[in-house]
Length: 318
Image (cartoon, rainbow, N blue to C red):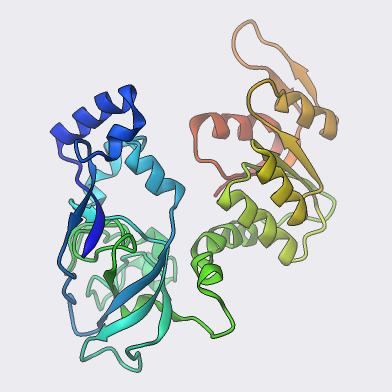
């Protein structure tokens, strides 16, 4: 089967960094770390695993950063190479192991991609997994699987950027017939926004900034409104289509960022804050929003989030 793969050997990584500066297209030419290849269907690691036939595989911003070699090699010990891309998914069960319980061939499912203690074969869960905080698992490199934070970053599991991948039964969620494939595919990114909204739910009299109007920013905005928040929500958007989507999802105001836009001044004006110019560097914001949901994941976005949030406010990294 065809699969979009990533193999970060030192020669490939170095060559990709050089070629990417000449032309971004060379990053997926096969000379860099990303390539297309014919791969066998991955075997089931144990009897309580299933094979999933991909219906849709989502494209996450983290996937794009990996292809463009923007991610730090810091995470390489938590990854096994080569791996097949794709952690956002919706699929159909194509085969089941002998210990798969009630899961059946033909069921439509989404897969929670984290490879925490249970998929790795540990019966004695680590402290975090036992508490339900599987995203903080301490065993992403141990157990019955090679290193990997999630499906789509582990050599043994495959990923949704291929026709088939494998998943542990603890990762499966049945998709109701009333939910389309397209909407089911959005569950994983929406869960990121919902989690952030639940952890940092604003009071109705607060002014909130959602910094970034990509998929995660829009999902965070949607989650806040679906949970009933009446806060005044500012959304920082780069592109007109993002601004239009933010308005549809309940943004109180949309502020434009990017070339020629002064979003620091715009947000300061809307919050009654003042700006101060130091001898060197970016302006200080004296005042600002009550809380910020940082939904971009870049150094500059984090800098802006801290700068635009008032003293004693809260910044949530989504």
